[in-house]
Image 1 (cartoon, rainbow, N blue to C red):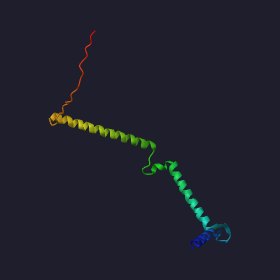
Image 2: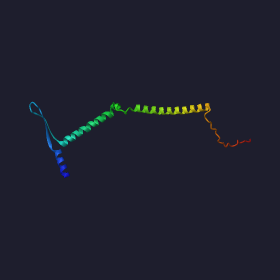
Image 3: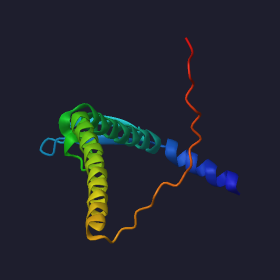
Image 4: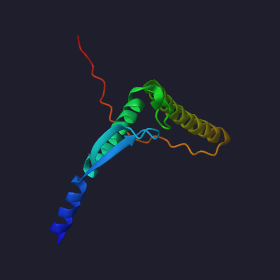
Length: 131
């Protein structure tokens, strides 16, 4: 049963139709087209693919891509990356400076406990040279 359904569908797609464009005043045939449903479908699909391809090419290869949100020029992206790195390094330097100032403030106010280095060092005795 499925085979007969596809067979009739293929027959309907391949049936030939005639499209006639006539002059309304004189009833003269201006243009005649012999078409099938399959040829119309293929033609419309081809036009759709062609228009989509042309639109994508127009956006990709022209400056129109700069108007797409989130898409910028290569130089702007590079500058943004450099500014982000510079900002991160400045934030880190500010944190180090704040930590240093807090430590100095604590030492001056006597709040900070100073940890002494109690590690013993094994220093070898100085060699005496005899001439």
